[in-house]
Length: 424
Image 1: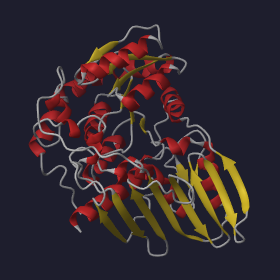
Image 2: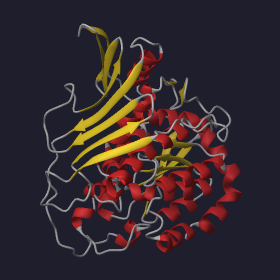
Image 3: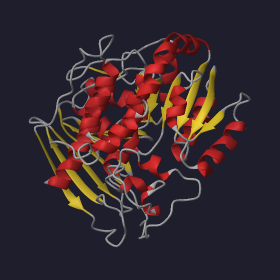
């Protein structure tokens, strides 16, 4: 299925990507200087500094030998708030930017952190790689299948480190859960179920109007179709509109489906990196182009709708069930944004159903129930080290892509299910 993401707005996307072509060419001469400074003091620029962006500011500012040189946002209110917090976190000077192209053109930034709305992830990643910057981009990696291909192509042609912030892959208890399955303790596993069941609030309805004072709204739209500003399509709630996000499936779903897919195929997660191994997937190692492509499903069936939030502006479904059929095993995704009742006692999680037991996993830990419904194994949750892993990869010039092909496959599962839902 071909995404309508690029076809709806090709001219707009070419204009925004083309605007940095000169920047990328100019940065080629800075390649050696960038590599050298990254080995001593890693200098970072962060694009998008609202909720997740401010969390990443704190994480990066607390890393030894890391200095944040610039923060960038189209909303001056968000930039000023983030700047105030950063002043308390580091003594070094930094600047604020409104246009990420300026950040890419600067020689004092080695790595770019992208925490923008989803529709900017791929264009900024491609531009940053072309400008010889290391890249840490938040999930989802892209906003369409076409974009995923473009990002992988850009990565294969680059010697820069490219990380996607799939933080669950760096949690030690997530690794141990998948390794427990790969070691055969559950026996044959033919069904995995991933879900989120949150009681979200309606965003209501709102008329179009002028953007907030100082906001560069046309730049915020970027490659998305042009339209009048609407506050319901802006901060945070943008993710419930197809032009900018993929709903709950690319919000929570990309994380939980990732774990479900890996465990279903007996993959392992390696300590310290986001790579995978065993059976259907392996760590790409030193050869990105030669990495094993993850196994795709034979069919995808998605059913659901906007059943609960019928009187508000959001477009994406509040209720959705997706069945991924791999021929000899099945992965099921379910989300319901209006129900407080949790699945398996967890608001967001994954269940692996094996012939000898069932493993229930979430960010709080995991448990295995044997055939008698007794707890046979358990482990508590652990924090993620995804930022530390990225910094270490840059310092060691480790460009093995850290599971990028695998993360791209999970991302495409979400995009394909959304296309199936929308197009039937």
